[in-house]
Image 1: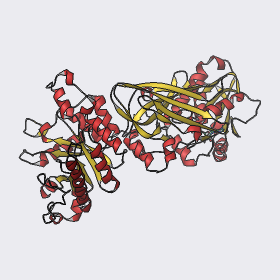
Image 2: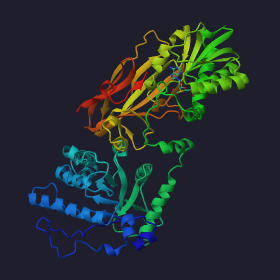
Image 3: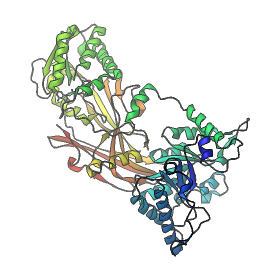
Image 4: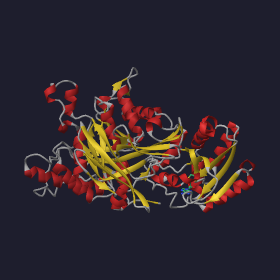
Length: 593
Ligand SMILES: C[S@@+](CC[C@H](N)C(=O)[O-])C[C@H]1O[C@@H](n2cnc3c(N)ncnc32)[C@H](O)[C@@H]1O
């Protein structure tokens, strides 16, 4: 322990009981002999802060001998109780094999009765059988079976343990690093530590331990997910563990600093938020202020309005263009229209429509105090219900949610089409939502912390971090404005192919909106608008994570439905296994009209 603290190591991993103490607890054990060395060797606070315990490796939970199996259960329980007695923050458990059902039963039993101590299951990045396949020691006939894959064994164990939130992974970095898609499966998993065996280190010209480029890239990738690093094995370097500690610290410093945008987003990583309901609820001043801090969104609107004013044939030759800002909030889109008109050298007559009486107060103050707003008329109304003789050449709105249509832009804009001239322009002119299956143990457990089954039938706004999008996104619903077809119900089925097996925890949702011709705002990763931070994606969770075997195809089903008072989504997935339809009839989550 003293050596460890001299080397600036945070904690040491030690066996809870000596490896040679293969005892028979079933028979009662020898009560007159200490189980292990005394807790008095280390002060209590150090056990809890500076020691992680290792469970004995000789245990055999899934062999053929029933007596051994039953004894292993008791030994595991005994060691975990000792770890709890010492208040250890974590214990490392042996690697599960494909036959891990009884092992999982023993671990689950302990998980259910021991809060406070995290369980880290040791899993190699590549199993020993796969290693042999890599190094071509086995011929192709024997190549790759599900049960050889360490991720598969872990996925099986986790499923048997009902995805318990306190079951984590200590990933052992192996000599070979598999292809990126295989590595990325671990991003969605609760990896708490990387175990780096000393054997995978190379020695540089000065005699110090270093990692190969491939290992470096792997470790750096996982640094983003706040993993801890454990060096394992007999340290042969003359300066002891500090040579490794210094190298890992150096590697840590190599990861690029967060950009300004990432620093802004960081507190929201994997933080679930309920989607706003700007139609049913009145937004608060703070919420408007947050919107208004995103200059990129308003620049894009300004660009779109300018393009329309300069190029659109419908507006050509008009002495004055009638513009209506639908859902004007505190007025940033009104200002964007005024700036665009100045640049286009066009005269506008602007109506700012808003149903939130508190935002109306801000708009009226703007009108009275800002000389640029002299041609702005403020109307306090729901845009669907205002009657007027002034019809708009251009309507501008931003009623978009993370999934495009989830703040009821379609219902509001179709309901306000009577305000537009025939042939008039809508900015945005269309928007499309996009979907993809997502793996994220973190998000799944976050939903579970609310302890309410309805929460698995609710979508969340969240900045994905410890999450892995499992397949390229596919389009879901599209709405065009204006449109003769004003039906807002939708149903979409999309197929996704999986070359590698995966655990799906839900669906990721995005949108891309065409404001005017080529001017878009988007959070859809392939086309996302750089530096725009007004929207995070949407997460549609599954009640139970779904295992998808390799080389399979799943179909994702998404419905957008209404009963005239509310709108809701339902979602499901079919393929090798079937996910129940979530949120049927909007029973758990809906958006008020
Ligand atoms: C997402 S905010 C955008 C506000 C502002 N345009 C901006 O970009 O900062 C949407 C605004 O539309 C308003 N709104 C939503 N539905 C409306 C409706 N049917 N009639 C009038 N205003 C509506 C909300 O009150 C809110 O102020």
